[in-house]
Amino acid sequence: MTTENRAHWLAEEQKLDERLYEAMNPGGEKAVGRLAKQNKRPVRELIADLIDPGETFFELSRLAGFGVDYPDGIDDVPCGGVVTGIGRIHGNWTMIIGNDSRVKAGTYFPITLKKHIRAQAIAENCGLNCVYIADSGGAFLPMQADVFPDDGHFGSMFYNMARMSAKGIKQVTLSTGGNTAGGAYIVFMACQAVMIDKLAYSFLGGPPLVKMATGEVISAEDLGGANVHTGISGGADRFCGDQAEAIEAVREILSLEPPQSINVHRYQESPPAVPQDSIYDLMPAAIHQGIDVRTILETFSDDSYFIEYKKNYAVGRGDNIVAGKIRIKGIPVGVIASNAVGIIFVEAARKAAEWIVRCNQEKIPLLFLQNAPGYMVGSESEHMGMGKYGADMVRAVSCSKVPRVQLVIGPDNGAANYGMSGRAYRPDFLFSTMRARTGVMSGRSAAGVLLSIEERKRESQGKPMSEEEKENFRQKMIEKYDGEAHPFFCGSRLLNDAVLKFGEIRDWLGMAFEVSLLREIEDPSFGNFRF
Ligand code: COA
Image (cartoon, rainbow, N blue to C red; front, top):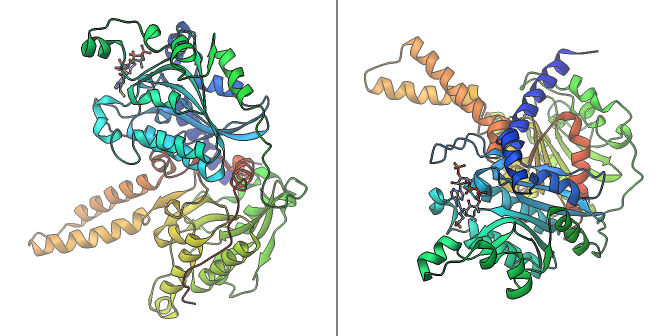
């Protein structure tokens, strides 16, 4: 049966597919043909061979870089010019970061750096070994001031490699193209580097610069090719004849890593009792329509089993957040989920803060299912202490030590973004869906606020707005604020780690909790609550 909701979300996810196809195939067949002439395959094909056969590559941030408005008429940097994601190598979850040389020779734009560094941060946080597939022209030179000198710019990539390797997190580089100037450090900083004959080059200055600086005329191969660095300089460790051989070399380097294990008891995995795709019928097409979140949880939890915390507490207000425990692929997970229209009342905030503390005490990870347009406003709520109880929730989230994953399934506005573990609160992973709308307030509310300011201004100038002007102003603001809250806009700026289809939620949450539970969970310690 096709419900209206299902038809709506399938159409929305079709738009997502189209956007992703565009992002993942820059330059089309022509660009693949150009690579083939250089004896290279597209970076995703290399990654497919690098990970264990039949395993999924959980590719992150594929919407990064759309609509960036950079110099030289660059509006889009497909996928940010770099592929990042998590897959298993010899059974161990590994972070893979690969330049896509089809996007401006794999050069680094600000969004490329943000994506590369976010992937490194996940790897460092969770203790994942990293493989870099390096093929880059280095900094995108027209934007050098925005990518070169600052913290979070080019140098941070190598700073991260050094610190991670000091922590015992392996850094392996497979160089399959140019690595010039600063980019050469991706080879030389690695614990082990693999270079490919007559494809990979690594030097502090390329042949044109060398000629200019010293007068020496030399080919790229003789200056810094695979033979030079594996045979003469010692800056790289494995010489390979082609890409296929290089992939095997990286797998061999990582073949004797100790097997990973998660820091929580894992129960027998079982599928949900209800059809997983019933979520498509349950999610209202209208973004601000209330949801029954218990039925949503059933679509992706093991056995559709949910142990609810404080179910009878302040029904109608306290249950605008539903709390409890589920299992996902055998992993026990604490849940804080927006329910109904999601506005957070005092009782809901108190219950959420309490549950966050209890899950920390038990050391089980937390899932925040975000569908909240904000905390309740008005004198009744303020006098009851909405501010301080909201702050307690924010404090509990901020000081939480257990892994946290946020999944946005609806409105995500105002301070509710904070209390429900938004990006600034550093959840281990943050996923979005096509129903998500992340913005300071809804387009309608923002338009109302801005219109009242504009009206006052115009009145003080003696030029009051006509009804038509007001309506035009309102529409323009709604379009702007709703547009900026859309998952495409947020994804392009890396405000989430992936935009998931509803049908993908269970697999991605399973991966995210497994990966984030590889790290040790510290004992809880929560500053000063107000209570
Ligand atoms: N900054 C800005 N644009 C760059 C760039 C850079 N560092 N490196 C390459 N590009 C652009 C090229 O202008 C070209 O743009 P176009 O498609 O609009 O014409 C595109 O990227 C592809 O470059 P191209 O040279 O055609 O690709 P290639 O596969 O033949 O060679 C390199 C790749 C990386 C070997 C070569 O581009 C190169 O040497 N780049 C300069 C490297 C460098 O000195 N970087 C120092 C900065 S740290």
